[in-house]
Length: 140
Image 1 (cartoon, helix red, strand yellow):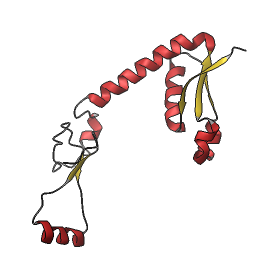
Image 2 (cartoon, rainbow, N blue to C red):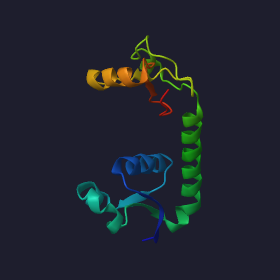
Image 3 (cartoon, rainbow, N blue to C red):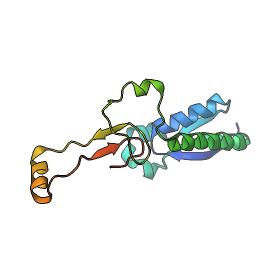
Image 4 (tube, rainbow, N blue to C red):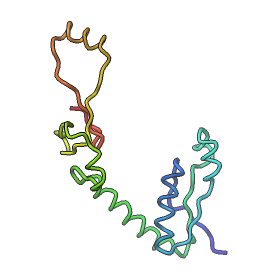
């Protein structure tokens, strides 16, 4: 049996399985160490060494290349302004404002309870609506 080396560690088993699936789709055999322990005892994940994605030592170079491609794809998607799948566009409220930071329409008006809003109005005067963008995480 080939010696296993750790390529990445994860504190979330969902992310670990996504990356593992991508490597397996490229024909690379890999295993997740500690996945069940961390999933059941997540509060001691750091003490157990997190979930370790491991491959055979002879597959390390190919696996690193695949992981680099995955990370570049993720960065490209994150930097795409207003990135949406076609089915997602239909679910958006047409009255949502467009984010001034990234151009996404995946926004929501922040609802505040009436009592603090009245107090805020009395102390500061009328304030404009606050919106939150779920694409870039900015408030505007």
